[in-house]
Image (spheres, rainbow, N blue to C red):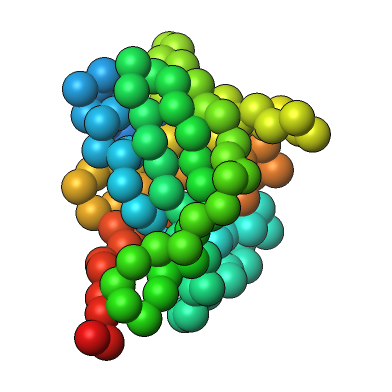
Amino acid sequence: MKKIAVVFLLGIISLACKKEISEQELSKLNGYWEIEKAEMPDGSKKEYTVNTTIDFFKVDNKKGFRKKVMPQLDGKYLMNDLAENIQLEQKDGEVLVHYNTPYAQWKEEILELSDDKLVVKNEQDITYYYKRAIQFSLK
């Protein structure tokens, strides 16, 4: 019984400590993000050491898009015309990203957003950790 009470108390504390993301902070989503790892609901982790694609977000007034881009050796990014339309929703202290393509619709919750870190959780309870992509060049 004590274990249940401790787990319950820790859950309440972690929820109370969750920092809300302000509307002004949502602009930090703009730019290039590289995935570092994913945590599965069972606690297992998948590390991403080499990424051939990077996520590019462009949002203005809570609407925009996400594209997968490929970094090139000259420091530029190769893009195609495929994009996922996104709409941000702030609701009950949460920030949801609603994705929409001609083929599917889904959403993710932004758990953390700073200048150099992005953490999102999808509807399958998989948590993705991103870092701000650093542009590089071999030129």
